[in-house]
Image 1: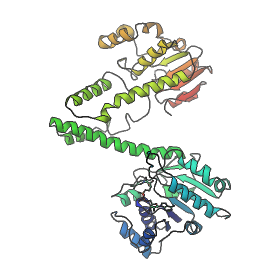
Image 2 (image 1 turned 180 degrees about the vertical axis):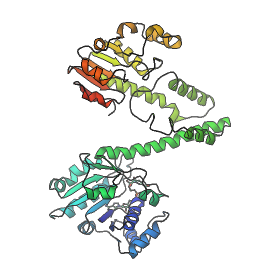
Image 3 (image 1 turned 60 degrees about the vertical axis):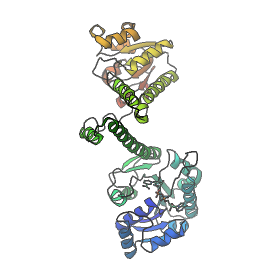
Image 4 (image 1 turned 30 degrees about the horizontal axis):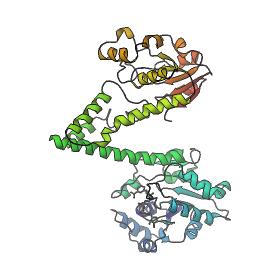
Amino acid sequence: MKISIFGLGYVGAVTAGCLAQQGHQVVGVDVSEQKVQTLNRGESPIIEPGLEELLKQARQRGLLRACTDAAEAVAVTDLSLVCVGTPLTVSGAIDLGFARQVSEQIAEALRGRPKSHALVFRSTMVPGSTRLLVEQLLADCVGAGRLEVFYYPEFLREGTAVEDFLNPALAVVGTCDGLRPAAEPMELFGAEAAVVNWSTAEMVKYACNAFHATKITFANEIGRLGKQLDIDSTAVMSLLCRDSKLNLSPHYLRPGNPFGGSCLPKDVRALNHFSRQQGVPLPLLENILTSNDQHLRSLLQRIERSGQREVVILGLSFKANTDDLRESAMVEVAQNLLGRGHRVRIYDPQLNLAKLVGSNKRMIDAKMPHLASLLHEDLALAIGKEGLLVAAQRCASVAELAKVVTPKHRILDVNGWPELRQLPAKYEGFCW
Ligand SMILES: NC(=O)c1ccc[n+]([C@@H]2O[C@H](COP(=O)([O-])OP(=O)(O)OC[C@H]3O[C@@H](n4cnc5c(N)ncnc54)[C@H](O)[C@@H]3O)[C@@H](O)[C@H]2O)c1
């Protein structure tokens, strides 16, 4: 393919070297005359293992050149990759100025030409940015069918960038409608690349970096506390990583219910108290419960905003297949809704009030002494003829629900149960 690359910094230079190595004809563009000259000498503008060699070979094979003229680069290529910087303003907002400049230049270069072109943004941009740039600067080219726009986040890490580019940890491509593009651009993205819409792809990049930052901070907090206690936190974290069932796995990495139960809230609270006693501030861990409370409040707001006075809770315990009600978010939801005058019905076949014992029983006696009057053993009676179904657990099958749910119901899916969309009621996901 003939490819132009806008921005010859850490991402652009690596991309140029790797694409040329794969046999593509590459034209690099940068506003910095110095970077352009460096690349044209076959040298690397940045320190990155293996890159200088790739650029030298690319120049020798006649597959790479650089210039400062955007129009010239667009004219001789079929696809442009945008790798310009997206720095932050003083307020912390992202500055799309360089991406705007390049978009304008590409639009200008394409205007009045019959040739079709693909534009691929690789710079990290907050969700909605690609759509904004297209609507504000590229709409006429897209409308005339001369330009197809993609968002293709870059996941490389400096220091191992060449290796990461050639063997990416993840490949995601965003298209306008989330549909798979034609074969040619897919060749560049890789057949394995997941195809989503622009803003989902933009969000994936931020989710990944936020996750990496969270992992590092978590390990560092465990490390700081361990050091204070003379515990080898390297051993602790190494053992934590040994569990690939619950720890290093997709488990617990799905938006849904606030967490609850007899262990997680209690143990996080105890760890927070203990670390404060030890004089070791752990801001990430100390804010976990605040975030969980916020999640619950946001669920209550969503229920309130539905305008439904009649609410049916499917699943009261803190997770499926247990009757443990301790710190269950749905107990809080039920209590709160009752306090606001909603009519609440509850269906949870795992719950047998007569069998509740110990702290579980004490908690429910204190918080919801009237639970028995809200709990229905019969699904049809619980569901009723209308109202909002708050689906917290899969405590009935979709086939059973299909017999009783009516178009007068509305569904709020709290825990990711996409099959509920098959029911005749209007469906809404809590976090999706
Ligand atoms: N550095 C990384 O490890 C990394 C990894 C993944 C994603 N990203 C993202 O990729 C983007 C680029 O990052 P970087 O580290 O390569 O930035 P960088 O600052 O090293 O390079 C950006 C380049 O863009 C050039 N530029 C600015 N305006 C231009 C214009 N109008 N036309 C042509 N060139 C122009 C600059 O001169 C500079 O050489 C950013 O959005 C960044 O967040 C970076």
